[in-house]
Amino acid sequence: MPDPLLDMVNNETAYAKINLALHVRKRLPNGYHELETIFAFLDAGDLISVQPGDGVTLEISGPFAEGLSTTDNLVVQAAKRLAEESNVTRGAHLRLDKRLPVASGIGGGSADAAATLRLLNRFWGLGHDLTELAEIAKPLGADVPACVISQTCSGKGIGQDLTSIANDDLRQCTALLVNPLVPVSTADIFAAWDGVDRGALESGPVMTVARNGRNDLQKPAIALVPILTDVLQMLEECQPVIARMSGSGATCFALFDTLAEAKNAESHCLRTMDGAWTMIGSFR
Image (tube, rainbow, N blue to C red; front, side, top):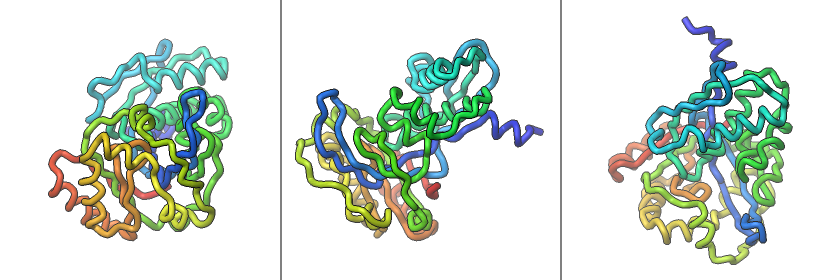
């Protein structure tokens, strides 16, 4: 029988990320965009596991493993960066169980990289706290520091200026994620943004801010991926608290007051849209 304590050390979940709201304020000269967002994280996602190994190696399995590189991968980049920053000479053989769709606006590679940092921090006995890991994560991508923390927070700048947010009201909701399994390019979606600053996020309780917020990438994403209109309409038919696209898409989410409502909505979506991917989760 596996040792549960060993399993805790050798496995880490890459929690699915949702942008409850995403306000794009301006383009920056370095190619990034200045934005304001609310990050929230579900209690499920990809799974990273580790065993002793020579150097840093990676194998990938799972429903969304096809086409992913085991060498040019954020998981490997994260492991090597942590080793370099912490003067680690031990190796690690990593395995990624890819359960979340690729390039889908819910963390994906960023969450995998973040989970790798948390996992190897334990496995190598480094003792970094999450704030230190988030700092190490910054060069890996705009969303990676938030994914390291994996708790509800606001993100400003390019998304790396993080402030924790109380989420008691959010944790009473159940989230349904729906993805039509149509690939989208984050770069193309940002490039299609019209450049209009529609204002800052409000302040206040997270659910109020989320309801009154928006995703400025939703309109350009719909223009490039028209099926998102159908996904959002399908979710709205289920009368959620909020229905919106996450990040640059193509995953859309709906929040419900109860698990039963979320399950009914999931059944409706699967009946309505052939081949859609869905996931139900609670907030961390």
